Each structure stands twice: as C-alpha cells, then as structure tokens.
Length: 460
Ligand code: PLP
Image: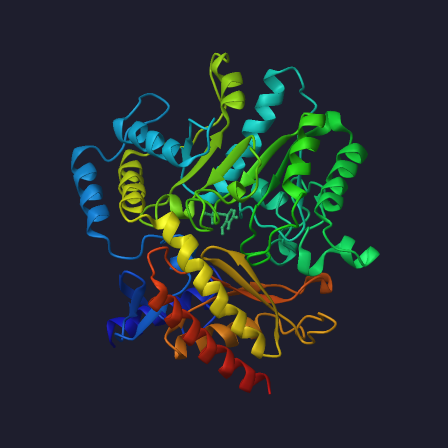
C-alpha cells in the first residue's frame, strides 16, 4: 500500500468511525503534501492552483523560506512561556507590527489561536468593558443573519449561519439576529421595491436594540465583507456609518470581524476601511499569520483598552497558548513579507482585474451574483436568475460537484452556503493568495471557467 493510500484509508476509517474527521467534498480525500507560492501538490504530484489560499489564510502564498527561518530561530531560542506569568519579546514585537496595520487608535492586540477565539475574546471584552463601567446588565450581542463568526459555543451563538449550527441548537445563548443587509437579497429592498437600503437595514438593528432593551445589549458584531456565510457580500452604502451612530447612541460596542477580510485581503488593511467608520473592536486571524501558525487577535480601540488599564487584574480571560512566542515570531515574519511585497496594494490592483474577469461568469445560467472587494470575490448560484430562486436543494451535492470539477481542472475552490429554511443557496468564494499577478489572476479565471462549464454540463 502506498503512503497515499494508507493516509486515505486512515482518513476514510476516521469518517466511518462516527464522522470524527473533517468532511471532504471530494469522494476520495485528496492529500496535499507540499506547496509553493499559489500552487499545491497532492500525493500523486498533481498540481492545483490554490484559489482559496489554504482556507483564506495563506495570503502570502505557500512555502516562504523567510517564515520558516523565523520559526526555526524562535523555536530554538524559546518556544513557549506563560503569558499569565511573563511577557515575551516576540509577542511584543508582533503586537507592535500589528499596530502598524491597524487603523489609528488601535494599538493593542490580545493574541489568541484562532478566529473563533478572537471573537469569543471580543464578546467577553465587550461584556467586561460594560461591567467595569457599572453596566452589568449589558450582555447580549446582536449580529446579522448570513454571518459566520466561528465554531466555538459563543461565536456560534452570534453566527447567522443555520447550516453550521442547526444540530447544535438550542445553543447556550442564541442572541438576536438583524437582517443580513445583502444588496442581492435585501429583505428591505424586496419589501418596498426600492434600493440603497443601507440606512434602513441599519435602522433594523436599532429596532432590535430597542426591543431587547438597550440596557441588556453589549455589542453588535459584523463582518464588513462576509465570508463563508454569504460569499463576498457587503451592505449598501450608509449601513456602517448608521451602525456607528446607533452603537454610540445606545452604548453598544461595534465589533468588526475581520478574520477573513482583514490583513489586506480586500485591498485595504482592514475591510471596514472601505467605509469611513471606526469600530470599537477589530478581530483578526487567518491572514494575520498567513496560515503558518494558528493565530488570532482581538484589537480594542484605545478608548476600550483604557477601561481595562484601571482594572487590577485586567481582562478576565486567557488560554494557555495566548501570546505564544513561536507563533508571534511567525506572525511578524508574515506581516514583514506583506510589507516588503506591497501585498495590500497588490490585492487591490489584481483584485480589480480578477473581479472584471469574474463578471464573465454571468455567461453561465446558474450564476446569479458576482461581488466582493479586492481578492475576496464571491459568486452566488441560482436556479433561476430572474426570480433569484436558489439552486434546488441537494444537501452538499452541488458543493461536492463544484469542488471535484475544480480539482479536475487543477484549481482548489471553496463552495459553501446552505439551504436551511429556503433562505439562500449555494455560492463559491474565490480568494487566491495576495501575491498573484494579473497573469495568475487570468489563470484563476480560466480554470474557474472550465470548472463552471463542467458544472453546467453536469446540471444539464
Ligand atoms: N470569523 C470569520 C469571518 C471567519 O471566516 C471564520 C472562519 O472561517 C471565523 C470567524 C472562525 O475562525 P477560525 O476558523 O479560525 O476559528
């Protein structure tokens, strides 16, 4: 038995043994064994264009020697020290580097190990912020439908992504959900036949705060550009500006989840910077470490951080792997790579070109909407373009079909979505590394064309 077959057999066995192994879209698990730049190779040396950057995190591309060198040096010097007891130099250096990326007023980062943890930390930070200011009753966190903030219990509670939570309900807490504010399927546009409903969708958040009781609402959390739950969608103009006003009026913290969109993916350091709005807390992960180590971070604005400075034991939170020195050294090397290669600018420029190419996908009947910013592009599929009726419900069959067609055409894709309550349908995220040039963007578009053509034939 080859090594590849052995791994596959073990993997299948894991699946058969009660599903305690991540689901694969492909019939057979493909084992990825090495990568270089935007390319990855499987155990049979088939090469694929990684059009999803690992999982929207390998933003600087695979196999960067600079990062491997930084990891080796730090591991040899000090792999770990407890952040509850000691400070460590790599973590300090990394948080300073992060502060060069964050908007004015954001100087500190609470370092964790994933996006879910970053959002958990933000929710708890908001809660303690109010507590310290004498508002102990503020604990609810409002979010949007069609949102994803992570898979841990708290992050799941604020996610508006039924496909990822139905089997977990009732959750420990299931907080109120505001409209998704998706222009393509805007509940408000549909209701009154109008457009430019950004402010109206934001006002729906205000009504929720009023209904819940402002004295109980701690925070509003949202992705500026949505990822897994609503590929590449973002609200109409005016939405985030109005949300800022509402949050100020009701003493509700405005948390932006930049786990996927942050650190350059959309062509700005942080996606919220496409609008003229300053949030209270930013969360990040994925691109923050380029996938080279599990890292996330919660970044409070100075006015939030200041409240914790007067608290004797600080933020009542922490995990063993918080502020991990080895991860921090890796994170610094990744952000330096981004600076050295102007990757945020590149994401904006090449993203514009790739977006133009993706507009060509309307030639396929099942493509309903192409949207996104920078190198975070989403394509939503429909059964009927006129009525926007989703594709027929097939469980994950359509997603598997698309993923496998992608592999056949030498490209890794990220299909997603869900049909819970007939709310919405399938989509695909196109999120290549920020290092690609126009030529590689064309390669992404061409391989997606070939993939969609195959999917079209299969749909009949
Ligand atoms: N928030 C957003 C916007 C995400 O896209 C994700 C993951 O896809 C998460 C949070 C959760 O991050 P993680 O998978 O690192 O826990």
